Image 1 (cartoon, rainbow, N blue to C red):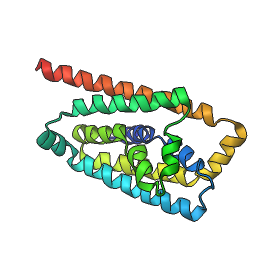
Image 2: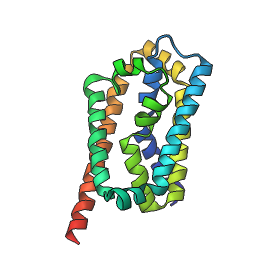
Image 3: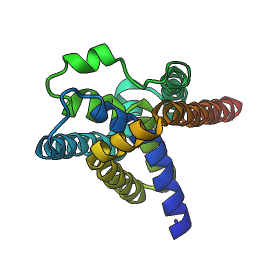
Image 4: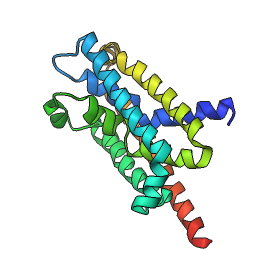
Amino acid sequence: MNISHLIETTIYFLALINPPSKILLLCSKNPPFTKKELFKLTLKATFAALVILLLLTGAGNFILTEIFHVEIYSLSVAGGIILFFIGLTAVRQGIFYEEKDAKKIADMSIVPLAAPLIAGPGTMTAAISFASMHGVPITLICITLALIINMALMLMSLQIGKFLEKTNTTGPLIRITGLIVTAVATQMVFTGLADWIHHVAL
């Protein structure tokens, strides 16, 4: 894999991780996080998501095929469908999560931040699929780079939130991002179906 492909794959994982949903979740807390609280929360969520994705990248294919007897294309279709409805919710309602659920959570670092917002169904599916197609090492590098970028953006969430509030761009940004997520999800479904058709035809 060359540098351009590495960058493209990292951006693809970053799109699946979807930093705006994390930023908007962190911005919505009232009273706002302190800088220390935000750092601890972001670090813990990123580490937990990294562990989940590393485990799936290294052993996800074995777990699926040998233990659950599920093929990669089935996971791709299922993950794409779930991700599609997440993106559709953002487009239609302007939210990536249920606010009433988020406000009840005392510690958001694991749920909903690490999973399902960072290590969501789309990211999990892509991690397993890319590992089987391009190898575990390069997939781990791309995931780690995407998580580092996402973490940096999460740490800037308070400043970004203030800017978005002043410019009244929060709603449009969520909907545009949701449209991108639905497009990615649709591609995941098409790819899974194409792999299934190829598998059946053999």
